[in-house]
Length: 217
Image 1 (cartoon, rainbow, N blue to C red):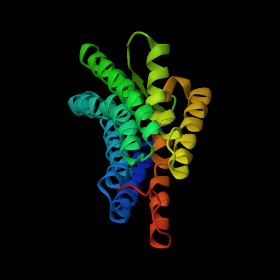
Image 2 (cartoon, rainbow, N blue to C red):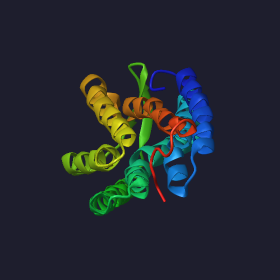
Image 3 (cartoon, rainbow, N blue to C red):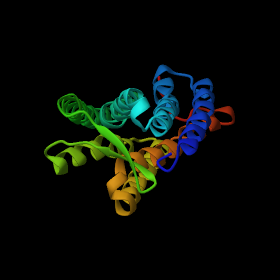
């Protein structure tokens, strides 16, 4: 987690189990794409575990690679992947058009943050019992607005109540993480969002007792 290597590895292991279970419950390709979210978070949390245990001169190379991989998830993958997942699940034409616009915004901010990562490589350091990711880029307010639009509001725009629930949890956790852990926001919010992604599994579980959770074609 944001607080220790043990927490990161533990969260990663639990999310691997949840992600595999979600994949087994998913039926349509769109559901499998959405159900992969816990698996992707598992990889990210396991990567942060490596970041934690590789601080120091002897392992600085490993730390650098792990930091960049973790940051690729946090900065590039999620603002692109999440709105696409919501769009694929959506069956209502007006909502699909709206989500397509959000996908474009997510792709734009993901591309910009990828450029920033290449131009100014992110550095991780342990401070105050957390991992602080030094992520220099310009237009912070606009970047954060587009990022939250892609990663949380896209889910809130869904016509599926359980998807909106996940979006509400993600947005709420972002507010809490920023209010209490602004300096370590990247690490802390990613951990919160990772844990909350277990709700993806819960959204698919009723499939066993009810006909169709998402009703995707």
